[in-house]
Length: 299
Image (cartoon, rainbow, N blue to C red; front, side, top):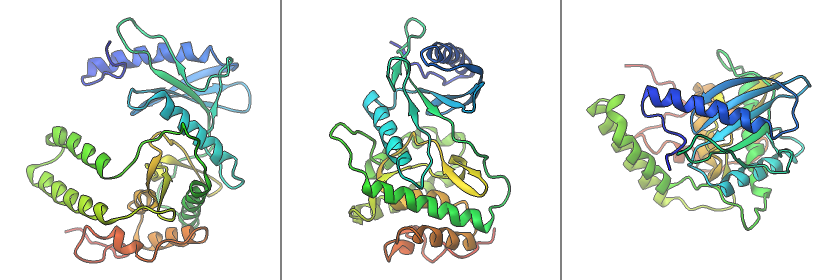
């Protein structure tokens, strides 16, 4: 059987999107929704569509690649349900079809593996445009802190399965990058990547997970995976969520900010949850000098 997610060439990508739209339309019929419009969003680890209805709410339909098992996808939805039960968090939430299923396996063209499909409630808000305000940055820190507090309080069932983001996953990503780096990196650039990777692995081997620094994380928490409503951020796209160091989540957001706003993000985070004393040194280990809170001028 062929992988449903085949798109190494432009022709395969076009064929994939044709298959995907048929799967999406078939999947929608299994929900009690009075939908009006389906809008393609993007192709990445999943193929996503916005489902607009003639009622107040909208939905997100996801066609999953074969990267995650049914159990891993169900575990993501369980985690999101737990987050939504917290009084201070609003995140996407999975919904069941007419038969009560949260993860469906949908028939597709002959010869291709049937993909898993899920439907989620749409989180209203807008992506950030332009520079961040002080208020938004502080609230982003508060949000990340609340996510990590919820992670610390979460008791996972015995069948809960999510990926682990650590040394092994990092090495897998580097091996994949090595196959394709020539498409966007020079040999000099690739050498720098390898040197940085060696330092990352070296540092990770010295870190020891505990209940304060390690747990369930979003694992892709850049500003593109947040929407804002009246300056309040709401996290979306938990498709990579899994186990890892909490600093992983913060690093993804900090790298987008100017030094002043990095401080404000941390202040927002620590208004909810205190960081370990050596968090700055942990983040700056790739350099020979401090850089996190200093402006680095272009050469």
